[in-house]
Length: 343
Length: 280
Image (cartoon, rainbow over all chains, first blue to last red; front, side):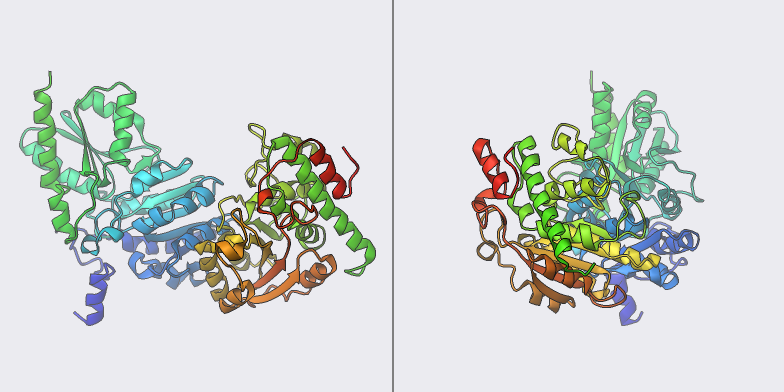
């Protein structure tokens, strides 16, 4: 491996290519979402003159390079200036464009929160803020680069649609859907090594959760990069005689309340799984929905328990936080066991 | 008519007076408002809207119109009467100013007010908005210009300099930033709170072509704006307008006490008289 290749791998930008099946947890990837981002938008832009892509000196990380190579006149690199990027995108949206403004999730959502609220969501601009390398997927880069709060922060902004990409095919579907979706969106991507959940580009509707496996004893509601390990957990639980439904709640805002309440009614127990702080994120959204509807079922939020994540390789961190398949299965068993003792 | 013909200058001076008197009137409706930050840019509003901007009030969404981004959104109370006067909406609607559900709040809302090109209020965003609009104009092949009005106190916001850097880098010659350098923020003189000067030299260092002018001198403003270079691929243009916060009302000039205020009773009549109007 050349020095440059090593450097790119270190930076999470290595072009490992579609033949490389490595992922953060060692599972088969086959397709690589972050790389799909630039490629899919380049394809869509062939037929849609409204699409522009902005990034903040991370085109190699989010593969906006693929877009830039095909549509250089519609690619804008603003340098390391995320606030300016998001607000410039809003200005372009006011002139009829659909800008995709992409940077690490931690910077997009935390640094750009006010710009997303005031310049994109409030005036109803069709800006798509793309936060990639979400959750703890940056691993040993540390707290500054971990994006654990973005779902919670984005979810509390009115008139902002918040979606998470599950895998490459799912991301393709989201990007296509986003072109005709009114108002501003936050699109959360993983690091680009998420294993495949959808065999083909799914027929999605924003705001409608996807049941990726049905079951009767428990529902795991997961989002983004946690859908695949949730399925692995469901496999493991099946071996122990627990029938598990897995719901891909890719739209975190607005939440599919009907899917949540149906899960509670039909399976009697709900576990949420997200790669982020449980405070304010998917788990909080589901908890609000359940409690406000008076659903009294065993429930647990699983994710990062309101703490800063230490450094470490991503796979080690997922194991540490039980956000891998075996870890989620163990949490699910604890939830079911504890509920048996409940009068 | 020559740019600086007496009639034209007198007309624009009258429109600047109109901005100030309407600000006083609307502030009384609300019970409080920004007087002095509007008074400093009244001549700028008059020259831009009545002599410079390419607009069609019957088509507020005309793609080739010039854009105006009021980054110092708290001067909106002075902009609304201008938009009404030009015919973007019925002036009587202004009487709802700040009432529950009114389109007209202290800061402008593009979704609800024809002629407002972008919502503002949080300082430091406008130049990025304008840079995005200018870039979009270039991409779409339109020859319109985008104007952005900033306050000098606002220049302490870091995003301004992100935007200034990008506009210089992208050579947005169709972008005109105007700094209403009225010398005062809420807490006092800008030079004491967080010095912004030398504004022109700072922007020049970011690749802008800069101009400095007395922001109350209508003939000078007319000449400067009309003489800006073409909007092609040149450097972005900066106009530093040296102004006096509270200009036109002695008690408000360069007084931090009138950033937000309310005139009551006889004071209201006195100020209108000072601005050259009949007593109410």
